[in-house]
Amino acid sequence: MNTEPDRPAEDAAPIAAAPQPEAPQPEPQPLSPTQPAPAQRPAELAPAECAALLAARFPAVFGKDVHRPLKLRIAADIQQQLPNTFTKRALSAFLHRHTTSTLYLKALANEPSRYDLDGAAAGEVSAEHRQAAAEEVQRRRAMQQQRRTGAIESQRKAELAQREADGQERVARARLLRAFETSNLTRANFCTLMGVAEAQLDALLAQARDERQRHAVPAAARQPNQRSR
Image (tube, rainbow, N blue to C red):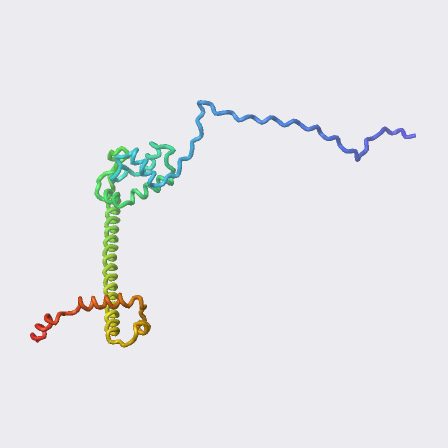
């Protein structure tokens, strides 16, 4: 008879733990009236849009036909007075275009002072900046003159080439007229020989006769010259 106490079987499956209920998720709390909403990123404005906004807000320095040297680091002043209006990239692009225009550079070369957003003097234009602006204006003026001279020269060459082409065509029409007046060929054979479309022959001959008449020197005008020789 077995007197040892009973043992649980070693291969018996362990008892699975009872599933725990999921902890409830906290519900999002609405913003309180005193809690500020997160700031929105300003839109990426084009330079023309930046110009319109700045002209309306700061006409003393950005108004229509206003070109005055700007205070150094004026971008920070703009961002301070118009927060969340311009991205750094958009404002930088506009200011670069504005301060590199020829009219602005002329003002920078001639004005003694720089100006803030209200149009008040805010420091002097340094001699270095004034000289650099004057040199750039002079360089652009020289380039413009060079382009103008080049355009005039190109136009002159084109007109000369056109006159030469017109002269060659006139000589060809005169040769065609002389050949037609001395030829015994039929019209079709003459056109084939001269390489002229038959439908164009009458117009070419009429133009050649008109040119011969206009360029002919009257005999009465030639005789005095012949006598003087």
